[in-house]
Image 1 (cartoon, one colour):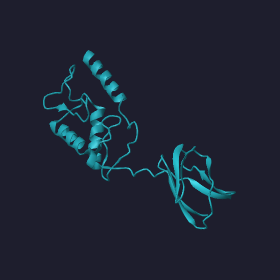
Image 2 (cartoon, helix red, strand yellow; image 1 turned 180 degrees about the horizontal axis):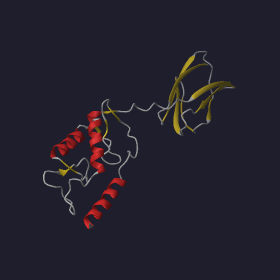
Image 3 (cartoon, helix red, strand yellow; image 1 turned 30 degrees about the horizontal axis):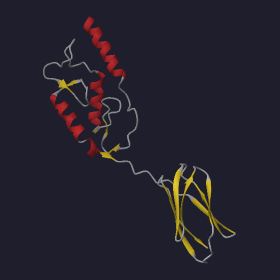
Image 4 (cartoon, helix red, strand yellow; image 1 turned 120 degrees about the vertical axis):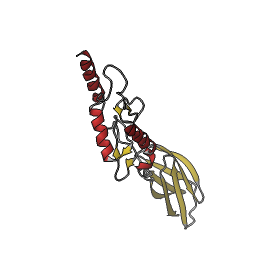
Length: 196
């Protein structure tokens, strides 16, 4: 009776930690595969049948264990789907778990690369003796930026969601298009031109 109580308490404790993954991974499984979930956060991609069997094994973690010990009954071994996985299964299932772990990277589809932040918006205003470039952040991130044109380069700090007025004086009108690039250290970039 004592060992039955110990095994029941141990099973409840082991199952309390099982459930959905703690967080979604950046990668997802290829079509035809699902996360194994041998424990929370186990995002190794396996077939739906393996996932279902793993859930059944987790529901009865001590089914094939020798009562009162940390060993498996003859003919069974620890599953070892992860370090510390002591669910007793057949040697074929343990070999399959090892193969699934080895193939994990080949069964995922990487998430697309994040889109670079929107480049700053620029409006131009002529002024006596020069030009003002009003540069507006659209990325939502503070950044160090560089304004570079055919004839002028200047660095400036652009606070998130604000406008920086870059005064370019003296500037003599050439009555031509000037190519302008604004590059920021947060990856935001804008290419434009102004006639001046």
